[in-house]
Length: 165
View 1 (cartoon, helix red, strand yellow):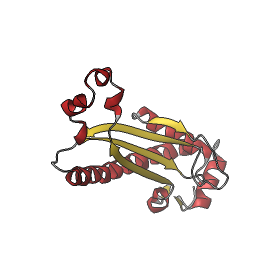
View 2 (cartoon, helix red, strand yellow; view 1 turned 180 degrees about the vertical axis):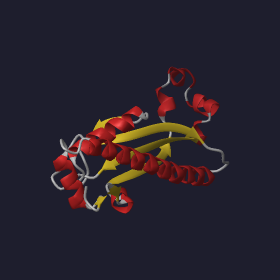
View 3 (spheres, helix red, strand yellow; view 1 turned 30 degrees about the vertical axis):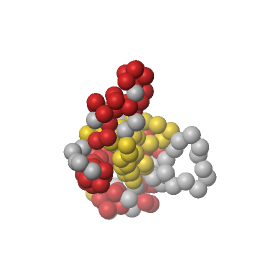
View 4 (cartoon, rainbow, N blue to C red; view 1 turned 90 degrees about the vertical axis):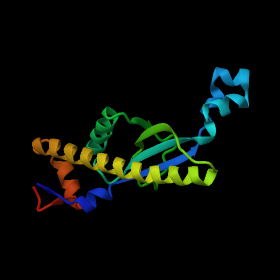
């Protein structure tokens, strides 16, 4: 069994965003110190990094579920969409990764540039993790190909498998 890596990469999407961190306002210290608390912890330099891993809808359900379970074991949270639209091309469940990072810089532009650079690197790392998860899930299912015949028929139609089984 050979996998077509180019086709496999098109079966998921990784979206990474960085926005200003406002979580410090929920702290009990904020009610006592106000904005001074934000200055003390350096909230100006902090960014909230959120990454979403969306799996394409044409991917077989069994592969989607097992891949999401594998990502859950690696520290991702599994969430589901609140509204499912008819023409949506992604699976209704997705994996999210959330972290808060502090970046060096004197101005907002420097902080934005460093956050953008970090997001690009994080997107590449997450893409590699998802590729490895998809490969291991497909290889695990291949061991039981008698049971999952329909899954491999769908993967052949998509073009993920080369040369058949």
